[in-house]
Length: 496
Image 1 (cartoon, rainbow, N blue to C red):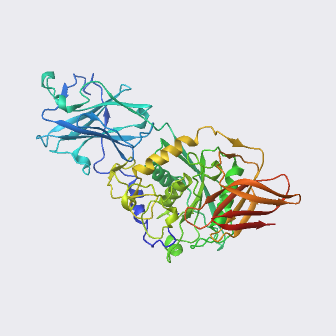
Image 2 (image 1 turned 120 degrees about the vertical axis):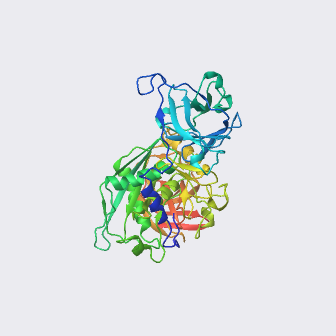
């Protein structure tokens, strides 16, 4: 959830990045599929050999975050996963005394494809200079269960002039396991028609507007594809306040809609609304932009019923808010960056100081490098990208979402009890006979009915930052009249 004390300008800079997502940067890479049998004019193709006085020092691949493949002629270990079906940029780092020479960069893939890209040599490649490396775009369709490759920096010449140092590996292909399978991130946008002020205001859910959200998720999440569509608007007469009042009711409604619509378990629902005419009008004195239950139990898949999130739809902040809140619904806590963070909501395992991304990133949509000083999308700071840490964590969650559930309890319905930060009950409703897949119970509740008390195991899910959360308990055969449960040392009592 984004900070209630968020300053007015926070995330406004994100709009510039989103607009840029529709354009290629000036240094974007031109890659072609090579055909050695034809030079395009019907004659013999030129003979290309390893360029003289060129020494390949490093090879790296970028699908959002830099993963080093090799350094100084040896395969490199990396914690950054590769994702099948996701577009990538391969950068070849080198050194040479022949700055200014035009060469051809080439990658040979295990599938048999050969991709070429023109380049002009510089003296020494650097991380920060995209123009200093030989760059080759690899379409996601060419990345399967393994990534098998060989790179070369070539120039025209006889075979006896071939420079072995301008190839890596020297012969054959180097193979890397692709940890991420083909994985589509599916999101249904659920627009709420805001009637509390009589406006009937609905966020823009046109195809161009949805594409902005889709591209932002594609930039940051380790997925092969993002599918997004909007459902019919939901009339809503309740007030949604900048200080968080009214948000919990929207979340409960969204929870019910997701189950009612009967979507598959891997679909995430995102409630989106504009409680004012403009972002400055809503957020002029500070505001809440989004809220989500931290869906971290069990850690590998979370609760399928809670694959929901909600946030405002103002275009200045909407796409980044959605990426942040959907991160919470993937079980991601806050990166420690920005004012107003609840210390209990900070991911204590986040490895980089100041919530920074920690390594070089790359935008596969618009072809731009992202420096390590950018901050993780799960923080509250500006200039956001995805860290290597959360890139892997999101992949681990995403690839488990589509696996069969190990334990599914479909024998009864469930009760949802929403509480605020003081432990006061704000809602209590039945949620039907939907399955609670692989829930790890963490509370014990006393349930009272006409036939006396009994005990039931249940689960408490916290909001990402807004105090309180939801208690989910299985229903009993008898009509429940009272529930008592201790949460964070406080007795919570729900009574009908």
